[in-house]
Length: 179
Image: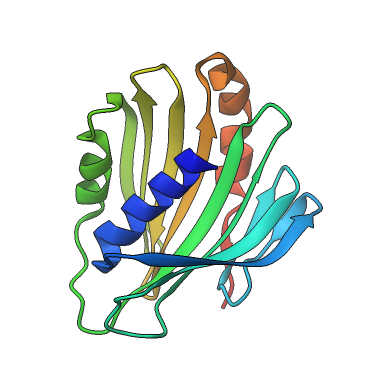
């Protein structure tokens, strides 16, 4: 969970400019299947039991700013997470590549791989893989629409990379926005 919190805190701080965050757990140990975080506008198929939680900006300029997410892990600790970060009024969006490079430039990151960036049907998407110096890694799929940014993340240890790769397309492909 520590690695997840670090990645979530980095993403939260980069896009919201918040110096601090608070975590609220809404539900825990929900069976695998279609998942929507409390108050979110997306659904994703979680392949494992998961928790529904929120991160909020203690110093955010807008009290309504809440990152809504679901997260869960296999028995072998491959972690699946999906989050929604609403846009703040008046806050200029940074390019998606800036998010990717900010993560890739951390001293613990050894490689940035598999970068794919595109736009379709009002969505902008950026997928990439980060491998850390210990050989573990993160598969990212970051999606934007006119309301929010959605981040899907799979975290794995070195020996689980192939197993995580077999689940990546199904997890990332299950994302749907709700109208």
